[in-house]
Length: 481
Image (cartoon, rainbow, N blue to C red; front, side, top):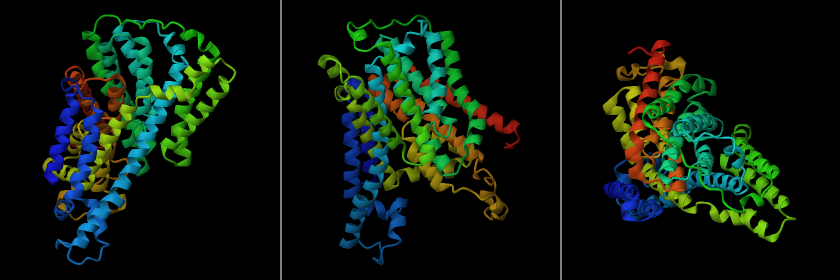
């Protein structure tokens, strides 16, 4: 069953990649593998756990009193199944739910702002129709917004903005894809810009000042290099969408500005909420949503029934992309099963054994994050490499470990470079990051189209940024080749 899980995962990813030729919505295979992997995990529990790859089971089983765990006893099998259902599924479902509720709240706030024409306040000020000029403006805006918000929220906001500026579907796909690249780059240098940087920040692997100072320049090059290439290759102008009749009558200019301010403030409130209260970000997002919802109810209570029916949040909720939520649920659930069963631990161990260099290991993790969610990859790295105590480095007795000494302390090179690679490597494939998955769901971007049009640009930017970081630490004297 251990191998079967890998096969099912690969087949599911192929079905997602071939969504358009198969004419099956990508949410279907995502939900299917998200469920089937846990089914096969449960059916093969004894075989899988007996191989010893599941670190979660190994830790849990140390407290059991079954004696010889190698015997195929009914009580042991039942204990394994109990562990999967009542420990692993519940634990991973909690983590997945945080992401889903965060996404649902953010999408709803953006949709409310959009329906009230809040984004029109911004789009009316963007007069340029030149593709390359518009791409630079939106990318730079995204880069800094994602550092203040996070890459997922920023992508949702910017995709809504693009819809107001561009009518052609493929041009929208291209701009949305470059937004993903810029959002992931912007999130990598901020302690609150990406889930993985938040994990490393909370885990004390990195500090806010260090990650901003040392990863900002590599992240900037990750975005700028592809934009420079496009500056010499992209031509033409964008076609603006037509004005929908009757929309202007629904909201006044003051109401549009109010909803834009409320929407942006509500999103900006989330990282502040997380920083000061240490509660999960989704709770801050839902609090923001509740306030905006209340304001809309009060704002439209004296308006006509027709206008209220269009602008009430209950009606707007019908426009939220629920298939995107299901897609997220399936993908994250599938990856969680692979993490729990020990597949990702094998990959991490293989990288450590075969590469034997902190830069190569981090680069490989970044490439892998284009296929597998970067959260479990970073979590695996955090588990494999505990934070070193600077006072104990001199006491390391293992000759093979001496070459790594000092790179795993707080703000060590391994952790900083991991924040960069895990944050930006996901841009290489559309399914490699939360931002990419969100854009894919919102704009129905084709996997193969992204692979042909964007992946090479993202890879060039990824390598360029990695090269800048490498040169930077050499010039600063933090690493000697």
